[in-house]
Length: 239
Ligand SMILES: C[S@@+](CC[C@H](N)C(=O)[O-])C[C@H]1O[C@@H](n2cnc3c(N)ncnc32)[C@H](O)[C@@H]1O
Image (cartoon, rainbow, N blue to C red; front, side, top):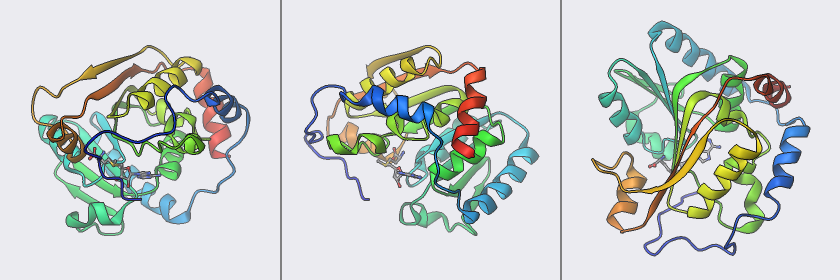
């Protein structure tokens, strides 16, 4: 799906947090997620794991990295860390000429993979990154698409368990509000929501477009404590 930032904000038939959010979270926490992980993603992940182990330094994740410009900017800002940017779109990653779904550019590893599979493999491998960026995820603004939003997706809370800190940025305030409610519901740790304006260069391509269009931006800054709930959630999502 090509999601372009609209000039005048996003059009949704929802004007408050979805009334079925808690129901979706309850289902995610009690049912296994049955979709098998693709063998292609297992192959890609195995090679990513080798590179990650070889680097051995702090890890930063940029999930849904789009064209990878945010991942590359993070890599320049944090030269001692390994930044892994993941996106399923060949089109968005095309200028990096990935080989077998990967390209290592200095300390930035760009990966073509579906996050629904990649995150489950990372959780099963007990990844614990220092920081997990979710920059402007597809908002799925129609009410009926609630379960496609990451915080109501059947694999929730897997993305929340992969790092000590998670930062969601979005131009849709409701997405951030629901994300915060999901974080609290799942008792993952502390989280806060704030409006913000990048005080330096915009971090990613979408951020640049939103800033240029004068749209308000929001972010959720959250910390997640490693706890028993993590292993239960991982086995439900991976099995
Ligand atoms: C709105 S764009 C934001 C891109 C980038 N983070 C930025 O800020 O410029 C959302 C990105 O999420 C990616 N995406 C959506 N669902 C995904 C999935 N299941 N697995 C991997 N990437 C996904 C899309 O391909 C798209 O590039």
